[in-house]
Picture 1 (cartoon, rainbow, N blue to C red):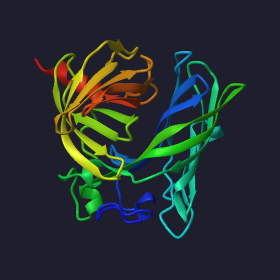
Picture 2 (cartoon, rainbow, N blue to C red; picture 1 turned 90 degrees about the vertical axis):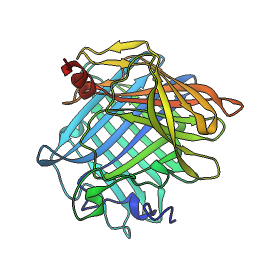
Picture 3 (cartoon, rainbow, N blue to C red; picture 1 turned 30 degrees about the vertical axis):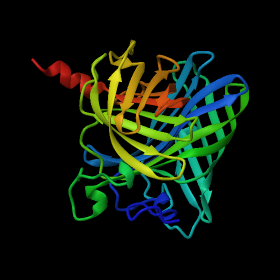
Picture 4 (cartoon, rainbow, N blue to C red; picture 1 turned 90 degrees about the horizontal axis):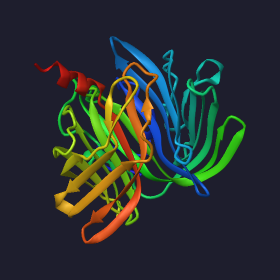
Length: 341
């Protein structure tokens, strides 16, 4: 299935060996009856600090219990960590010592939109072992960030397009089911979840704010801004990619307003728990509310907030609601703001 000139599937679900950076990550909301869970399973390769590293990020938010489990694991780089040959079954695997922090994603070459995802880690704070065994099947077209899946401006340098531009698409309609286990307790879960695949050049800025939404009118969207410290109550220019039910991805300007309240992590980073996103072109106003204050990956060198959320508001003349996600990498932004005399 060819999607655009920039993104071609199944080709681009596979590893890009000349890309300096590449990662696949799954996020979203899963339910077990009345029980609600948020999760992230991320496998990544980054060129940074003059070396190539691999790492995983895995987290679980138990919304009912208001408990957050998380772990970031650095793993020695292996060029064979993911499959690049599209005639073979696709995989992405990072295996940690004793399995603590391991991630596996697999799919058949004949159907890369149907995959199995598993992960396991030991939460440092509680000592509990958390594991996932999930099956996911994408329905419909992917969301192409920027409307066509490639950054409109160069973000790197080199002779290979993968060293110059950022490529980014998302499966936003994954029909997911399987199990989540914490300690001795296992839940059968299901939901509609989200996979991001980003590769190529990454911007030097390590700071951004992002919100994802899966709305009950069939619209899926991702809004972001970067390199600007969020100020409570202050509108910030941002950008949004909207995937409509007919399968088209369109890129718009948006405005994002942090509404508070703020939650200050033990590491001293203040995260906003509510964001409002206004999209004038489609007449939309959406409010994202974090489902739990503490959803920080605190165990890595640069803490980041990855939080399951709810979203509600209006899209055109219609009231909408849905599942959401709030991502905040604010440490560098707050340090920059503090350094200003």
